[in-house]
Image (tube, rainbow, N blue to C red; front, top):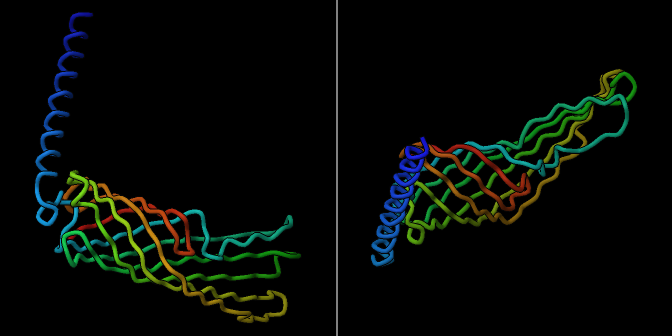
Length: 210
């Protein structure tokens, strides 16, 4: 039994060494190619990416807290829909839409209802590190752009039937993102992204590549 385990361990170690040597050889060949012509294959000018994600923590403006023992909160988001298209083998342009909503019922018999909606949109340019990282399934990128966020508030007194749109806040802000995608197939992958968009610090989701 010990001999079998030792044999398997040696075979596994030999396989890992061979795999590592092959990867190192591929990396050397990759970096010997000129920057202009090299590409790991994780992104190119024909790429069209559609992503769906969810962000946290909720920085959208819908995460207000009401204190008291007779409060009920229902919220969702922020959720993201993103699109990007390549214009060169390492540069893409795109945009996103994000949204979140919350409803708060509070006060005596929960007679008061606050509704808050937050929507954000933005346009971004991305740089992909496919000419620097020789891994076909891994797409590491950074992006910057400009966007806006609109938060609308409404107030409802259930006893008196009064409904008032109290106010709406509109902000324009710069956008900064860094992220990575890992593709399980040529057309499907998962992503993780962090940065600033006034909706969340981190968002995670799936990407479809066409």
